[in-house]
Amino acid sequence: MDQQPAYLLKIFSLLLLVFTADAFASAEFILPPDSQSRYSITKYGIKLGEMQNTLSYQNGVINYTSIATATGMASLFIKEDPEEISILNWPENSELKRPRQQSYNYFQGKNHKKNQKISFNWSAEDKVNIEGTYKKKTYKLSSGKILWARQLLPVLMSSDLQLKPDTISDSFYITNKGNIDKYTYTLEATENLEFKNKNYPVLKFKISYKGSSRMTYAWLSKAHYYLPLKIEQYKKGALNVSMLMTDLELIQ
Image (cartoon, rainbow, N blue to C red; front, side, top):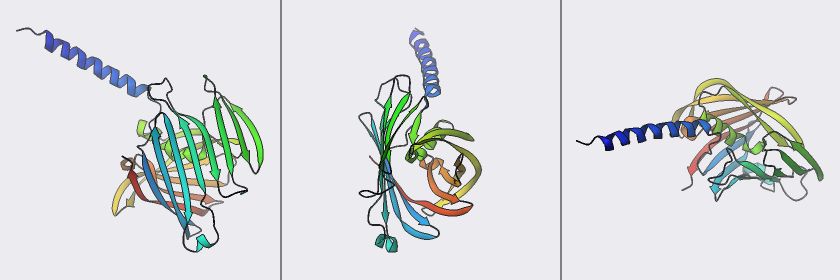
């Protein structure tokens, strides 16, 4: 009986295993699925409102939009819904191992002092020139580091942990308000957290950067693509803002 087909099949299977392993090893970025996540927002123990994050990837363009809406008494004082939008470029079948951020906008009403606009201009060597506006002033920055807007921290951590679930600590360079800061996240504990009447194992990470009096903690769930089920921000040791995921819906 001719053994050649079986022999060729075996060789093909071995080559496929090697190729798959190499492809996974060379991967440097994994996006969470297109989705909408919703969070309740509490400040100093008082519920302020809700935030909806929408992530979509189409035709090589990543759009990540966050919109906060005031509810209850807070809606009497907060008239505009703050909106953040990050646009990234990551063409399919390109040689880019990770997406490149193209722009970031933060809008909280006309002439609001916190409004921001940032544009990213990349060279082939991953060097970036930034032009931004903050408090009605313009600025320019240049860097040889991979830079991201702060809004993308949950997506960046999700990518890291999907690739390397045993990650204990890592860093990102973040540009915000005319500055470049190194944000480091470090594993603090493994815990369980309830979401929609079910307990999930989560990784509690501390997020910080040099020179800031703020400390942020994020509880990330593998079952939810390592997107945060809970976020707490402390200022000078006191809990300032907390966010709790209320819903995560995949976009088909």
